[in-house]
Length: 244
Ligand SMILES: NC(=O)c1ccc[n+]([C@@H]2O[C@H](COP(=O)([O-])OP(=O)(O)OC[C@H]3O[C@@H](n4cnc5c(N)ncnc54)[C@H](OP(=O)(O)O)[C@@H]3O)[C@@H](O)[C@H]2O)c1
Image (cartoon, rainbow, N blue to C red; front, side, top):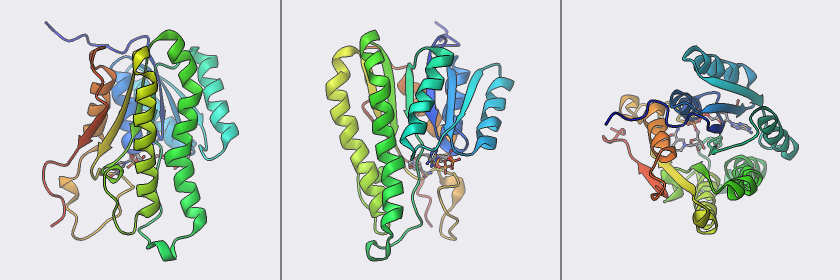
């Protein structure tokens, strides 16, 4: 039997960091599957570009410029989403990044603080905002962009690893709290992906990196998994070793 062409029609997906890279690809993929999308990030022009790409392929997108480090902007993002669509079915906590590789002794506390604010705290806060309505409706999907850095720490990336390990712990606890309501919770952990986050390096063959579309496809599969199955942790490695 042919698969349903719009398995996410009538669903509303809020994707953070949707202006470029993985978030943009996830937004496009979920929109292609029929979801109405809400796009958040700081750079308005990039959000508009993603929104236009979604609209060009017949989808629906609302851009909400948001700095996730600011609590009141997180609240406004939720309010604007509900004002337009009245519900949030899929939350993709994707926005994130980290400072360039720096040893702990040379790191700045302000850099650590902003990595933890965006990669971890904003994801926790947005989850807390969307959860009551998901519980009431016994329906919802929350996808967290972890990383292979959620599984092992690397030198020079201590704060990034702390944020992604923290996200893993939060996600596991969240799943145990809400699985009984039919809410899917998933930590999606890609290895290196060809985005602006990965700096240029002579030893790195970028053609062997994952593409943002590879990660978006995994997010799509999580969002459309059987109601009985939750892909609680998905590790996506580049097939071929990208470092020469
Ligand atoms: N690339 C990889 O190899 C890789 C591997 C594993 C996991 N990940 C994870 O995947 C996620 C996306 O990364 P990416 O590679 O796609 O990076 P990217 O291309 O740099 O995109 C990051 C997105 O997050 C947004 N963002 C950053 N700070 C923000 C803030 N304070 N408020 C709102 N939005 C903010 C950015 O928009 P603005 O700057 O406009 O705000 C941008 O849209 C991150 O969580 C990252 O840790 C990436």
